Image 1 (tube, rainbow, N blue to C red):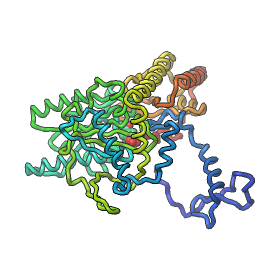
Image 2: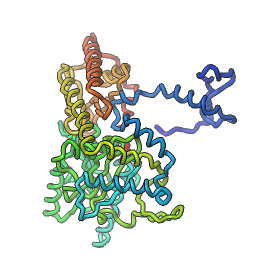
Image 3: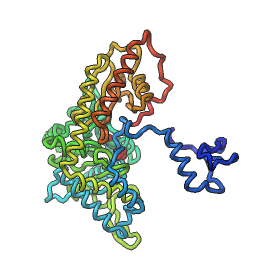
Image 4: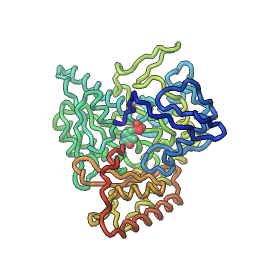
Length: 465
Ligand SMILES: *Cc1c(COP(=O)(O)O)cnc(C)c1O
C-alpha cells in the first residue's frame, strides 16, 4: 500500500543532522506530530535540502515523462505567481484569460475546426483530464440510451491493456466496465480489430493512446476510426474515440505533423495531454479539449458562484495553482512552434541515437526505436540467462541513472523490458555518457560465470507508468 498510514507508535525522533552551529543536544526532527516549537526557517530549510539529497537526480531520471527542466525565467515566473488560485477566476481574470488562450492554442494545434467551437480546460494533469473526458463519454452515451428508451446500467469502455493506470481508476471510480485488448506477440498496444470486437451498444467510447507508456509507440487512431466507421455502417453503433495524448499531444503536432490522430478525424471527440510532459512545464498541468460543445454534456458543467463571480467550470479539483497554466503560456510564447519543434526533435534525435547504439550491444534487443515518442523500450535476448533487465536497471542506478525495468501486461507478462524516456534537458553528451556506462556494466554482467541471485524481493513491480 503506497498510502501513508498514520501510526500510533511514533518513530524515535532522530537527532538533528545539520547544521552543526544550530545543533543542540536535545534537538529532534519531528516525524509524526507537529513540534511544540518551530525550528525556524533557516534550520528547516537546511534540514529539508539535506534530506532531499536522498532523492534521485531529476535530470538523470530517465523513467519519468514529466518535465525536469525549464528555463530559469520560467521558474522565476512560476515562483512569482505561486500565490494565484486557478479557481478564483473573478479575482485573477488575467490568469483565467491565459488559460483560455492556452485552450485555444492547443485546440488549434490539434486541428480543431473553428466552426465547431472546441471547448476545454486545464487540469492537474492527464489523469484528471481522463476522468473528465471519460465522464463526458459516459454522460453522452447515457443521454443517447435514455433518448431511445434503453437501459443505462452497464456502460463499458474499450482500450489496450497498455493503458495508463488513470483509466483503470476512471473505470473503477465511475463504475464503467473496463474492456482491455490484450497485447499479442509483438503487438504491444491496442489492435484495431480486437478493439472493435469488444464494442457493443453499451460502449461509451474507445480510448486510443498516443503514445503508450510501455514502449513509446503510437496507437493507430486513424485505422481505429476507419474500423469504427465500418462498425457503424454495419450495425448502427456510433462509438466515439477519445485520444489519450498525454505525451504525444505535444509531440506529434511538432515532429509528425502529417500523422492524422487528432480532430482531423471526425470520430475523435476529445483529447487529453499533459502540459507537464512534452508540454514542457513543471508538474502539474494537463489539458482536456472537446471538439465541440455537443461533445461536452452541459449538466457536467458547474456554474461556480464564488467570491463574487459566476464562472462555468468542469473539474474534479477546486483550488489549484495558477502558476502552471501561466508557465504553459510562457513556454508557448517563448518557444513558438519552431522552438517546440526544435526541442522535441532534439529529444527524438537523442532517443534514436541511444536506441541504435544500444541495438549494437550484443545482449540487447529493441522493442521500439524512439521514432514515435522520444521513448523506447528494449529487452535482453533470450540467450541471456545470467542476469535480467532488473539487474541492468540496478547497475545503472548505482551510476545515478534511473532506467526502469518492468514486465508487460496481458498477454505478454513474460516480457520484461527497460525503458528510456528522453526529455528536454537530456543532451547528446549525456546520452553518450549513459551509453559508455551501460556498455561497461553490460560487459561486466556478461563476464559472470553463473546466474546472479534472483532479486525478486526488491520492489520492481512497484514501477508505475
Ligand atoms: C502520464 C500519462 C497519463 C497520466 O498523466 P498525468 O499527467 O501524470 O496525470 C495518462 N496516460 C498516459 C498515456 C500517460 O503517459
